[in-house]
Amino acid sequence: MNIQDVMKMSAAWTTFTQNHPKFPAFLQAVRNVGIKEGSIIAVSITDPDGRVIDTNVKISASDLELFESLKNMQ
Image (cartoon, rainbow, N blue to C red; front, side):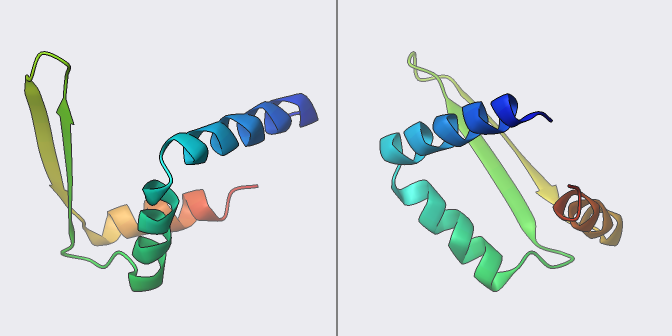
């Protein structure tokens, strides 16, 4: 990733956090507690028409390995 891409991402993140100020606090809380094997991550999307799409994932040991690998990427 070049410096221009990093700067664009940084600006986009700043805008996102200004638009959604509770989300960074949520991410920090997740980071403080940690995601453990057996945790369930649930995601729900509601479109403007009220339709809901949702799913959940029960975290496995291999998922945790993937998360650790992604965290260590530079």
